[in-house]
Length: 174
Image (cartoon, rainbow, N blue to C red):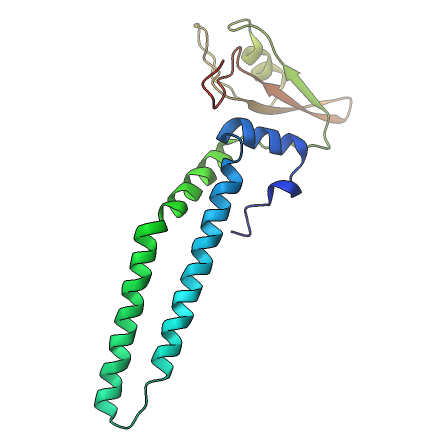
């Protein structure tokens, strides 16, 4: 969870990118659900660990069986918690996958952004001028996401951004 920064700590550009990609509030909602699940798992674990510790060793065979019963009860309760709320972990994994696929942009480096209608050669320019290697085909809508490349001009490094002619938003609008 620590590797997922809080929304308020992100740069405004990164916040906007997450909101437009995932939907407004989805990022915080999933982080909140996973944190609530973490707290519940810790609580159940501590509760059953304390029950196991309270087993008295008057009869070693009985106390061992009693401790094993408490352990089984704890595991069952943890399984129930995960059955009810474990979807939050799957949602977090999905968000991580989406975030890893997003372009990494150095917000301190000058950025050149190529925008324009579909199939006018934006990707070809990025491929020729920079380190970016976008897919180039002879039909429109080849570029489906934002792609990055770098170029050095007069000893200064620039980021070059290749954008689709049309971008689909999370709300289904173009």
